[in-house]
Amino acid sequence: MKQTLIAFALGGLAAGSAQAGPTFSADKLWTYNHAGTPNAPGQMSEISAYDAATGTIWVAGVVGVDVLNAKTGQLVQHIDTSSLGNINSVAIRNGVAAFAIEDKLTRTNNGLVQFYDTTSRAATGSVTVGALPDMLTFTPDGSKLLVANEGTPSTYGARIGSSVPFQFAAAATDPQGSVSIIDMATRTLAATAALSGVPTTGSHIRSNTGMDYEPEYIAVNSAGTKAYVSLQEANAMGVLNLTTNTFEKVVGLGVKDFRQVGNEIDPKNNGTISFGTQAVKGFYMPDGMATFSSGGKTFIAMANEGDFREDDGDRSSAGNSTFKATSPLDSLRIANTDSSPGDLYVAGARSFSIRDENGNLVYDSGSILDRKAAEKGIYDDGRSRDKGVEPEGVTIIEINGRTLIFVGLERTTKSAIAVFDITDPRDVEYLDMIVSDTDLSPEGVAAFMADGQYFLSVANEVSNTTSLYRLNMVPEPHALALTLGGLGLLGFNLRRRCKAV
Image (cartoon, rainbow, N blue to C red; front, side):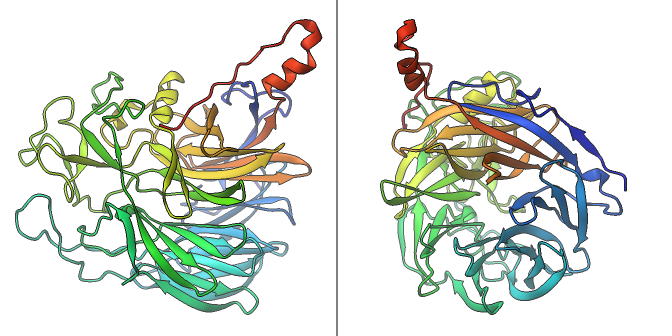
């Protein structure tokens, strides 16, 4: 069976990876090109999941799942799901792989979750869920499977009147956004948690776009008692009680002020990168999320990608005849359902942030992601007017007592993963950026441990490749200084500390 495989040496840092920093380094082990999967036209690399029982990485992408050997990157098997519908995500726990699959003919119809045994790779049943299941995840103990049913309309409602900000009528067919809760002991649907009528708190919940809440991503606390659901287009987070299987509240995530120092953006895609403070606010609108614990408390990390309606009816150019913005803001793509002349709002915060369980902002990376991409020479100026580097996904893992987050940047000129130490969520440190010459546009990132080592799997959508990195932590600079104190190296400290902005 022919494989398309690009292999890298295991020793030392591979070309295109991050340069070793004072506390972190990454070795690129292999890359698999899914365009070479035999008899699987249309197979993509979007979301990956690791199975510890078989040492394999399962990569979901539109027409099926490619199962890869985690050590070699070679294809083990392609699982074709095209007869069922487009696959949007995969999750694995306790030897069970779950696929989120939208309806084959009409995506506004109910979708399904298909189960597979990870050893035999045979299908073992399915459960019908809501419309357009976009993402799914197991609770930590594997007892429940949660499915984010996005329920996106196929055709949106028309604009109401001519007032600014814009208002839109509801779509004729808009399936209810919800979370399906599957009992894994019985493989049955235990509940469907809906969002209609749920109490709201916080600010700047977008409810004027002509669609209901559309769950995008789910993160679960370590106890398995609460789930946090990103409602991206609404700029909100749902808090789901897994004891009652109902939503407790919807939290508006507020806006980011790009006038503040530390929050600089480059608003023009004119071939020149120029960061500065601007009289604009940004909706956080997170896509990927992950939870972690610090000091006995749960925190939620969010990739603040930003998103408009699929038909772009809720976005405009700020310099048009309605909003009349002048340079340098005239090219900026703004939310026309929220903006008015002199009061502009954009989609996305161009950052990752950390919030507490109530949605309160604890940390935001400010302009670090855009600036570091520019320093690496991979900032895509063509994206300056529209969400910058576009943080897409996050994954968290603890290595040698430190909690690290990996933030995938979807819109850079090479695949880029920013790495931060979030051990103390109020004192976050930027460590490095993993850059790959052979990959482009990371869609899904997944960190895992195997055989006493730590790894990062990156599914790159545009290059249609999946790459695996080995992650390494070296001694803290101050600890190294103490060890080598007799050599006169006390005070050696290269750490760069990035405070919350």
